[in-house]
Image (cartoon, rainbow over the protein chains, first blue to last red):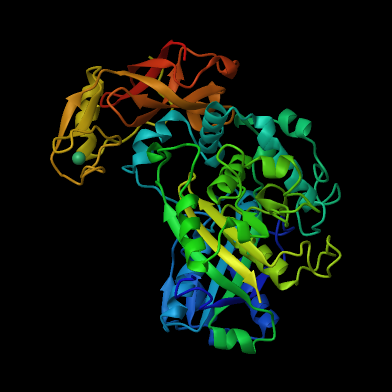
Length: 402
Length: 140
Ligand SMILES: [Zn+2]
């Protein structure tokens, strides 16, 4: 039995900024937001003035002011890359409660442009509390940035389950196969990036060591991205010119903030957030036909697949290794080419949403691997899972085609 | 002594007993007097039973490697020391600390084992602050 909020709202559009990836001239975060918002308004025919709720990772007041809006619901949840899946969860709840009719979820992050200007990126707030647990008890030991933390999870998974970095390398290889079908992907081809195009397990193993056991090709890109999604009430969804994708289930959870408090380095709170989402949907992993799984690192995707119930513990990587997750496989995963090979701006949750909408609404314009115009897959259901922080926070959505 | 060029933590008031102990080469750990469990990092309330009755005890300074990684890229003073091995240590008293491992070869990570026994040592990094490091004393 689905829960009361199941399908109480739908996504009716998902758009990106005019230019994503490695723009030739530096973009600001607000520019990436505004371009995507204008584009999703044009796509759906919903005027920006109809937006009555704004959901973003810390930017909602700036966005509202920039647009001249006075929204009735302002959500700034910013807990890492999964924030956007949580925003959809919160928008669903707000619409179900009758508070909001048109919710905007927006993302703008200039991970690449910020490097060009020697900045630190302006997509998310930077923590500077010298008395935070990490400042006192992990930063003194030279860890800096996500790769230096996530590598500890790979080591533990290898130890507990007898897996190897090569097992996880298959995730990078298959995800790259998807990227070669997506012209918007940074790693689409040698024309889009000198290291683009297909890769092998050996390429992954032989790439530069970043944080053992993670080599460079186990690690996501650093790009610019702007994306915007409209979540609306069923009445507006049915009247819209675009196809609705229904939010059958949504859930969120967290296990820790600092990795100091990560109890099990081979598990994340996605088990709990997915349980919440599946319960609301009245569906389970066996009902899912594709997945969009946050792949900040190969290990993130492998562990998350296990948490989502798509594979037994210790065997998440087999979905990629045996080809099920690959183009033409029975269970497509990360059809855009992932954070590993498509685009990863720092927080990747919006990219997951955009791709899930494109696939389930049949509006992907990338040729269509399956032969279905506008789709790389024939899936009608998709589990979407964002992961934020140091494998800390998770948001899960069960999305279904109309 | 060459000036310590890596991040020096600024102790906060409620973790001060740990830092005071560290200066004397002692591992001081917070323990809840209601449920008797040790927790790390220091809290204002027990994360297990939510009692606010917390005492400080001297730990054994022994533990085991829970997991580890070899950092080949780092910033600031640590950049000069790459590769180095970071690790999470399961304390004999319970809960877990982070550290940089000593007594290991970062170029041979396959020789480092989860479960290996480690012992704490302290390094004075400023007049006010000593930092804990852990050294492998026996294989896993
Ligand atoms: Zn207690």
